[in-house]
Length: 594
Ligand code: AMP
Ligand code: MG
Image (cartoon, rainbow, N blue to C red; front, side, top):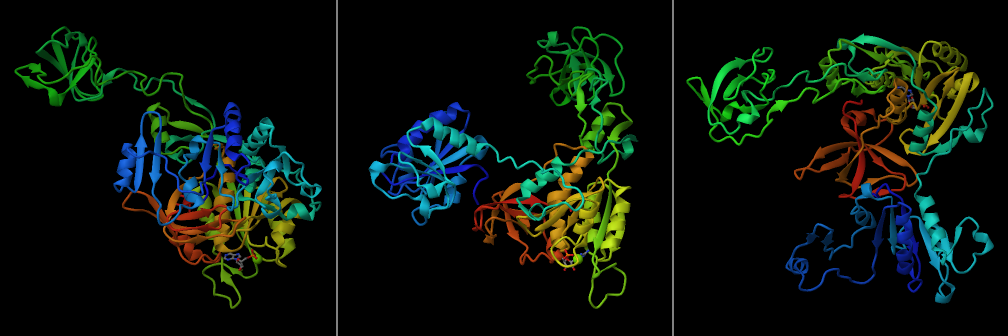
């Protein structure tokens, strides 16, 4: 798959001066602070090192991959005699963390955004009429009037081309949330907007604010809560100078002495009340306070104690070693936690280490969960001939419980507009968030959407994703509501993508980000271009220590079993249609989340 970084190609017939233009352009881009990668595709056989050079000799002797490095640069040369490397594989060689854009010279026949370079004097035809991936032309000849949708640049105006590239790199800021529309006034176009997953997440989270209520909870009940007020340390941690080892404390001025008189034995929690004198040592345990005058500890394993005297025959002693200084971990007045910090095990320990027995936290989020549909029945009842059991309410309650919300189970609503409208309006007064499933597609009984429309606001989006294309997000009165799709897998995948970030934001955690990483595909994976595919996957670590991933098999959006077999979602980006075995793909690990 292609790396997640702006790519821009330069397409032209040979003789147009691609490399010369890029050479002039690069300094202008770096001056503007861009970090640029360059990929050059050559049609002929090329070699980059010379006969006689060490790297050349090793390569010719049979090294299939050769890395040569010095303190200034390194290069990797990979021989690909059988199969030319794919475009995606070449791009994966870049360390995109240190780049803002990759400029590509050549690769004319691959579909990715390009600038066409054209010079009248070269006498070749235009490329853009036959290539949809051309987004701009740089030429010394004006364009025809029909190609007005292309950006036109003067090929001799390098500054203008640099400006175009800089603008192109700027993150695509999604359009601000249109002013929310009041009851019934939504225009159809807005209701049926098609949105990318990330644009939808941004719109949702931008429109939400953290709950304002806070409470003080005892430390024993603070796990998974979100800190509401900055926590500063009122003490030094550690509070006093103490030993980091079981051993012997001495004065550093005595390092050259060969023998010391052991004058005391101090256990943790106790202390030696006198000042240590020259030539003396105090036997000391980890965590015990250093006696006055002592500043260095030699570990027990390096000591030989006999008849009240101790020697350290082979120890290379450094002044101040093995001693923990007061405030080394935290100092009085230091900020320990910001507001929005989630309290996990480490934070519980840290709060306790500060001597606190309670902490101010955001109040818990109250979330109501409804299912909808005449065909949906409560488990435990007799199966109906035309119905199915309610899976969604249970998986959604599970997901919300994982997020430590107070969950209100509101049961199943029939496909009846009045009942749905009344129930949602009533519930909106009591909770921070409502989550429903079913009734948001474009079927005849899709009443959740209509209820939202008549009582608050609705944004009905077709998300460019599968599963989970329809998503309704809006408000009932002022309470935010998610109308998730009815298909059980779609409901869960939509929850993970949209509800989870919304809940974190409302809980006051403004820095939360979902864990995503890359794994090597072990099978071919397909998706439709223009749509993000979330396949259920199983990742493992191969013997080389790399993450590898396969799908759970057939990916129907009603197959809830696949969600249970999976330990990750495989995210196949919008611009990709096929992942080949051996290529990297993004995975979203599900441990701890579902
Ligand atoms: P809908 O979004 O209401 O058109 O439903 C889409 C599909 O999901 C239909 O096949 C429904 O029967 C199914 N479905 C809806 N709600 C649930 C539920 N709570 N549990 C399991 N399946 C459901
Ligand atoms: Mg339904």
